Structures are given as structure tokens and as C-alpha cells.
Length: 87
Image (cartoon, rainbow, N blue to C red; front, side):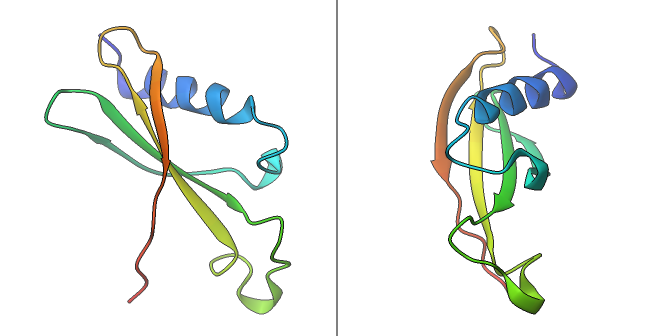
């Protein structure tokens, strides 16, 4: 069974395998959670390459991905965009 540390490592390795998607230096771990089936849900964010950011670059110019990691195999089984609602 995958623990949170190994699930985060799997998600990190997976997202970094897409070098055209993000600047690795801007990658951040945002959240970890477990869904009803026991799979890990790992949310990461990274700087949007199309948005220079300006003064709000640390928040406004970030994109979020949720990566599902299997509880049994520790393999990434899906990745999807995650919308963050700012209050």
C-alpha cells in the first residue's frame, strides 16, 4: 500500500516527465488527500508559462493539477486540471 510520501514522489516524477508543461523550479505541492476508494489525490501547482505574473504572479499565474495515485500499485492513474476558487 502506498503511503503519502511515496504517492507524492510518484506524482512528482510523473508531472516532471512533461518538460514542456511546466518550469520544474515553480512546482509546488499544494494538497494531499485520500478518496473513497483509498487512492491518493495529490494536488500540485506550477507557474503558468503564458502569464508573467506581475505583482500577483505567485498566486494569479499558477495552474493546478490533481494527480491520482493508486493505493495498491503506487502508479499514477490519472491527471486532471483543478480549478481553485479564490475567496
